[in-house]
Structures are given as structure tokens and as C-alpha cells.
Amino acid sequence: MKIHPLPFPKNFVWGVATAAPQIEGAAFADGKGRSSWDEFARQPGRVHGGDNLDVACDHYHRFADDFRLMRELGVKNYRLSLAWPRIHPDGTGPVNQRGLDFYHRLFDSMEENGITPWVTMFHWDTPYALEQQGGWRARATAEAFGRYAETIVRAFGRRVKNWITLNELRCFTTYAYSHPFDRPPALAVSQQVVNQTVHHALVAHGLGVRAVREHGARGSRVGLSDNPELFAPLTETPADIAAARAAFTERNDHILGAMAHGRYLPSVLRAWGKDRPVTARGDLALIAEPTDFLGLNIYTGTIVRAPAAAPRRGQPAYERLPFPDGYPQTPPHNGWIKSTSPVLYWTLRFCSEVYGNRALYVTENGYGASEEPDANGEVLDLHRREYLRCYLHEARRAITDGAPLKGYFCWSFMDNFEWADGYRVRFGLVHTDYATQKRTPKLSARWYSQVMRENRLL
Image (tube, rainbow, N blue to C red; front, side):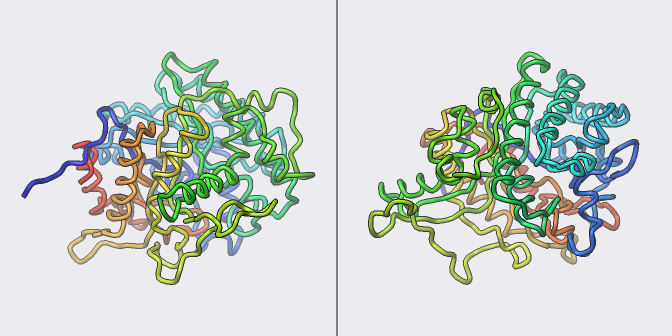
């Protein structure tokens, strides 16, 4: 039988990803300040089962073992985040030297195991002191982030060449300030204030880029990890593709368009109307500071088609198709992840064609379930393997068609604190026993390990 290899380009970056608040634990150790999530998890009913971030995966004390396991699995690139309140406990004040020392030890261990860091400056753990002063509603939070970015780039710039300013800014702005239930500060403010939080986060991104340009070592690169709304055409015909592109730009221009063009496009301003954010002189130029790559977090999306009749003024130029009962998805308590792998292909295409042909990386893609080891101690997560394989097929197809995809980071290296779902939802390639902190590579980990080593889809 002839085997047809599905190779990826030479020097393609394969990696895994995590975030500090989800794995580190030691939530109040060695001078770390409280984060918005530390406080949120202590509010009754906010997080499933009353789970919190106090211990998580205890990575703070076990990182050396975790990096040895990464090396065993062939991981060469690791996307991690630094905990802002571990560096600046109140967000703005003196630097916590013990926090810096911890990350120096962590980078030492990564270097010993041949692992290249890709550092996310901020992955949702806003210092609680800043949240009490308005959080992302206040421009002061963006300015404080700029000072924090300077601190970490100065401290670690010799060892870190790949920087990501923010992770999924919609999640700590739009969703956090307009959905009063599942993420801090869990408020329902006016649409104008919501839009203002987005603007402040974009300003913070620009300040992060500037910090890398001014204080990073030669060869440093910087980008953003965005979670755009994702769309794929029902059929690959000109009409349906145009509909998907229209949906993509309509829902993402306020972030990706502002970064690409240095202005909020007229269509965005019309949609905002009187709710447009207040901007200061120089903000839009700062937001559009040139980046070296764009990171994309891709999970699930929407299938669209061209409307049956030409849309009237003010109507969308696309029709969203509902998912029927029984459509493949993750378990009910985490059913937001539907298997829509073509959105990966089309997101790469649209980002490249609409917002510029810079390097693209899939900085997250994964599958959340609740599997446990069987009687033999194995975790046979075929559902995760199949999900990842389908999405990687679309990644390879996009590369073949010219998309500048340079790397892929699987979410996540190990099971961890999954925000409002606590510890019941597992995204890891490696199983975490939270009672013993034992790590067990799942079937998907062994499969992905071979994919990385052979640089081809198996």
C-alpha cells in the first residue's frame, strides 16, 4: 500500500500553549498580587464547583518536570504567558523581584530542555487593584500595561525573541463588560463604554509593540493573538465566498482593520454611531504600529451563504446558517466548540487578503472534553485527535493556496483551569490528575508528538 505523506513547509513552527493563571497556581506566593480572576473565582456561583486558581496545575513548583515532559514529546516551541500581578502586584507600583526571579528560573529550564519561548504579555489576569479603579474602562489600565510591558521586555528581552502583546482582547473587554455572568468584572455597561474598553486594549497593544521595538534585543518579533469571529462559505462559489468575506470583515474590522489601516473604517464608525469610543491624538497611529505577525486563536465558527435576494440598505450581505441538533460538538457543558474546520482555512485566507500579507500563526486551536484514564491508565481521546487532524488538514490546504501560515500552537499542553468551567473541562494533550498532579500524555499527545517530529500530517 502506498502512503501519501502530507508534509508541512521546512522550518514550520510546531508548538503547544498555556497561560499563567490557568496552570501556575501559587496564586498568592512570593509577593504575587491578586488578579481579577483570583477574586472572581471567590464569588459564589461564578466558577463551576467553586474551583479557583490557587493551585491549578502547580506549574509554579513543577515547571522543571513539565519541561522535561515537553522535551520527551518533542516540543520545541512553547507559548506561555507571564502573570502581570506576579511582576507588578498592584499593576502599577514597584516591581516584585521574586516574580522576575521565578520567570528567570523558568526560562533557564526551558533553555536546558531546548524549548523556545513565545511569550504572551497578558492573558486576562488583570491586577485586581486596577480593576477596582475601573479596569479596562479606564485609560490608566492601558498605560499601566505599557509600563509592565517595558518591565518584562527589559528583564527578559535577551532570552525572549517572540512576543505576543495580548490574548483575545474581546474576552476581557467586550465579553467581560457586556455579559454579567462568566468573566470578570462581569458587568453590563453601556455600548459606548464597551467600545471604549476595546479601544483601550488596542492602545495597550500598541504600547506593547512599542516596548519590544524600544527595549527588545536584535531579532525580536512582536504580534497580537486575536480571536476573530470566524466564518466559512457553505459552498466554494464566488457568491458564498463573498458572503463569508463580508461577514468576516463586518465582525472584525473594528480590531483587525484598525491595526491594519491606522483608523477606524467608515463602516465601523457608522455601526458604532453615537457609541464610538473617545480617542486621544496619536492613538490610531499607536494601534497600527507595525507588527511582525498576527496570531489567530481558532476554534469554531459560523457557516454562511449568500442571501437569496440582494440585501437592502442596512441588512447583512450574508445569511448565517444555524447548527441543527446533533451537529458534531464538544460535550454539552462545553458545547460552544463545534467542528467547523473549514473556518481555519478561510480565516487564514481572509486575514492575508484583507488585512495584509504578514506572517500568520495559529496560536490556539484545541478541543475541550472531560476524559479520564481507562483501566489501563490510557486516555484514548480519539475525538480530540480527529478534531485536530481536521483543522490541520485545513492549515496545510491554506499553505498550499498561498496563505503565509508559519506555525501552529495546540491548545493546550495540559489540562488546566478552564475559566468559568473550572476544572471539569479538559483541553490538554496531557491529562492532569488534580489530586496528585500526575501528568499522563493522552493518545492525542503521542500523535501530535509524531506530527511535530516528522513535520507532516499523519
